[in-house]
Image: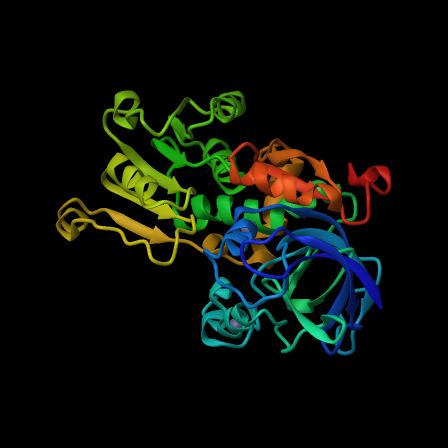
Length: 370
Ligand SMILES: [Zn+2]
Ligand SMILES: [Zn+2]
């Protein structure tokens, strides 16, 4: 079948919307109509070459959609089901999966790095040339074939644009606070970088009772948004956290992807504090830190990928918190675009002006997508 999708042909180039051939879903796979796809900084990192991936590739790894077709061997998903896509397919049988660490699934990581689906190979092509999948999802596309193990079935009443955000921003940001950071209510905590992931982490800090809550971002509009959501202090990266929290933070979340931000987060924590890093810096970047401080001050530095949890378990729990108003996910939304606005939206993301812009590959559709 022919579908329209945004292809990255080479690193550093604009995305080009073209017609591609999409194979039908194979064993254990699903065909998804992509209803909403968030633009994440990790997509930008692939364009910029910070996350090297095989080219050409259809980007987009944070999405929600409807199941159009079910491949052989899938017996727990039906046509018409609504799903959120997760950017690490989890095989369920490798050592990390058996150890309840599906975000570290080894075949999932291998297939993601190769730009293939978990079952192996690619389903996208143009004029006989294979096009790679981004993190098993490739959502900047009208339709996508994904592995069943990349999909989490959700209730059908959740608006598409809200649902999509659970796939990366919420899973990563809230998971950093809850799974990796093990936030202790009533203790001071902060987040560096108010992109989609950072804002999601901020929502979790507020929801789970950190006190005070600090947000650090250079953009005054984002600082104001953080205050409006309930951050106690929102400051720029040049301001000193210890001016507002003299004792330092119990938990710091770094969601910028720069060494300077990680150093600032580490320095802002109190003795015994934990720093969780979720940003994706350049692979050549290196951090210099004092091991003595880690030991003598009982500090923890924790890396977190995909929220250090389980998409299948955590997404429904976060959706439940969204329903009660505990996690006001819609605060992340920075408007919608069609394919024709994709490159300009990527530029706005690069300039740090937005939280989450959402691509509607099939147009606005029914009111539910609003
Ligand atoms: Zn992402
Ligand atoms: Zn696995």
